[in-house]
Picture (cartoon, helix red, strand yellow):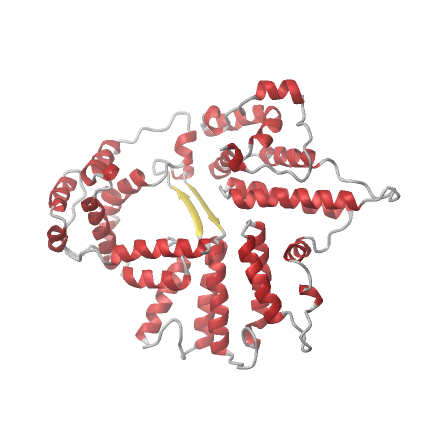
Length: 468
């Protein structure tokens, strides 16, 4: 089972549970009598729950809307704490904290009380139905079809309302006849955006919006839904019964998409899935009329990806730039919390470095070897950290990167960056000991290694998980 299938099943289960929630308070009380007391207690802290239709204006009312009096408090209690709150040296006190704690006590969140969870699902269903005009079961069904959409993303709503329009026209999102090209284009556009940025990280900071953090990361779980969309809609719009893959209209786009997907999956460490799509690409679009394999695909998976990555490379300058690009991609991935992708970029950078230096023969006087990889790696990291943070978004990303770096990289750069860390933390009101704690064993490291890290073989890149 792929990671995407696991995530999709979990997302479907959450939405289906909301869809199965009672529609009225009487039904809720009948199933979970304890919720009657909970509703009464919640009213005492401003979270008034009733069966009256909930309008958007009422829901978002800053004085007494359920968005603030119930859901914001609930999310603060159940979501991971924002990194910003951990970094600030003197965080502002939250006057609503007593009410937030009381909400947790009423719902018995620490005990995972079934009645409390039933009340939460009842309210989630009510808000979806009355405020957003959306059906939780239809959302679940679209999740089962396309994948684990983050419903905070506009593209998830795009797919929902495309589906609603098709249903109104007595068609389905899997098979439709009216305005096929534009409808398929909207679906492709939405799925592509979900693949590029469905993994949204949002850490609100309500007392000062400038401290809020938002970031969008690729979600490779949408590669398979995008692939299936090509097969389904490509054949529907341009049926060619004898052709492999999709019809001629979408064939080039499908080949380009598969090539990109293979590269992304490989660099994210999902080698089995990358191999699956490479095999499909080779067998479906990579055979000539006589049945032989096109030379483009007559290589291993690793060589296929490597050729994509290193197109145009080869000289000392090109190889150095290519490795620098992979190192920067590693720092970006680690700053987002994607350790698998970050470590894969580091591994590939080390492999490219070794391959280039091994290709330089003794007689090639004019062709220089690259500096030691660990030196390139640590210098790149120092340069990344020395770029001034112009806003709190950048400052938090830098602190997150520091947390996700392996010890073998934090030690050699710490002394070179320590003064800069202190100045930047002072500028943003961070506690430097929390944002950039000194790596353990620094005294021993300084005595042994001096100013630079002791060299390690180029084929070894330590994973962050080894130091957790």
